[in-house]
Length: 234
Image (cartoon, rainbow, N blue to C red; front, side):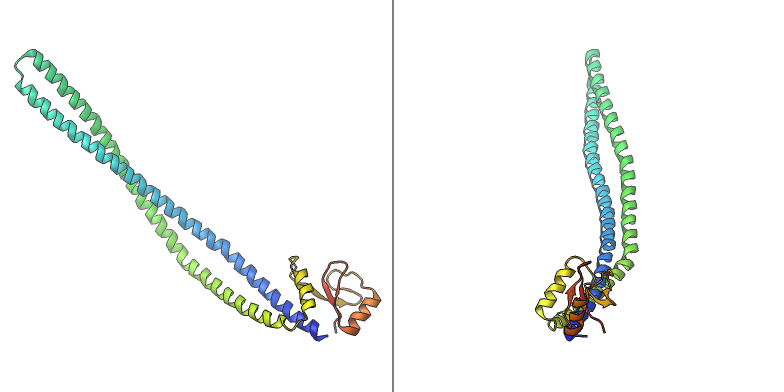
């Protein structure tokens, strides 16, 4: 085998290994992204629950303030009723007292409803906090394993790419460019031997004159059938 072809085949061997590692690395990314999204969804759900509690607590404080105001109004109206000296004043004071009690009753019912909702919302916060913790526990070991795999693959890729670079320097520039151009068409294998009279990739018959030239000089030829680089085997 011609030394140039041997050098090119060594580069192709590295490229095939690199391609396999890149596919393994690409397969890890969707799993890592899915875990990230699951964690984000659990975190968003918890934050939304907390915000709902905060909003309801603000309403609770506002309504509680109104209840206190109506209580004070009731007390003032009761005190006023206790001091009236005529039936007309008593009627007016009683009406004011009834109105204050009505408003206080409505505010108290609203406050009771808020208190009940707050209990449910706080339970939701607890549940979603537990759900987030469950996700984190479930993902921790898997994430560590995937991160370790990714680190190992990236280290192997760095070594292989460095070795590929060194081997590529031994291939004539024109031949390497033809090879890279063929591989850029998303081919994993770009170099094949002759198999008898034909291309080992697609079985297209190679004319005798071209086969003889390849065997005699060690040159490579592009297959007219599938476009790969061909070389004469041993």
